[in-house]
Length: 314
Image 1: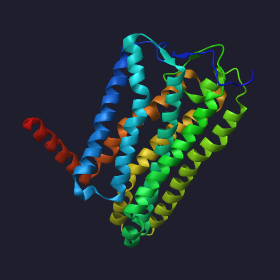
Image 2: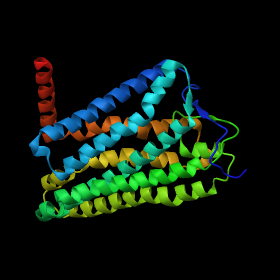
Image 3: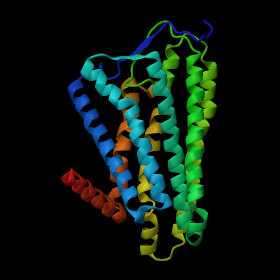
Image 4: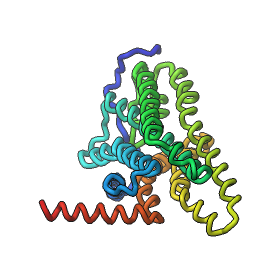
């Protein structure tokens, strides 16, 4: 059947979690992780905004990453919680398209911000004397703004390509959100153009930042190995260890989900991997960045004190 702007399917059924045993436990896990994600990342943003010592490029990018992580989780988790409470797994066709759009935006933004933060660590470690002149406020703002523009255009492309498809048979999605490849499998239109754009455009936007991160850390490792004292090496490594942990966590789940042979994949495994990068990783990021960071711990303490003071005044 040829593609058209009209779809005979007006809604989809997200049956991923409804088919799992112990739904009450899963609901509780999703709720706790979502609350931890929102509170943790908002605290990071508040701490960076209220502490002048953290008004540096690295923390500017971190605050943007925290904002994106909150939005990333908010694209899927509230709908999952609402479906469980209302006992209704349906999501409208337009709602599905909105999920796809924002998931694409925030997934690409995560990639870009991690790449920009890797470049920031490269400049800080390999060119410390030129850090202030290279990582200017204008450049930082331009990098973030450019990331938003590219991520939004990419999401718009995939959403518009999805609109042209027809869905006229099965409307059940074995997932907890509208996953692009699963939707393409349900379409009764020709999906070759969609698959081509996913392969080239989305693939490029995922791989290019990863390559930038890889190159940055190779150069960082070479610079660290040239440091003579073990204490100096550890100090240099500790400045990027948190970012490296987040990179490994994020890309590890992406690779396990999208770069495994299709024969070894299952719906349960795909959902677990998707849950890792849409829910678990955003939840863990605040803990990873504040665990060994004295400045962040101090700022979080100040933010907590400020919130208590405001609560008492109210």
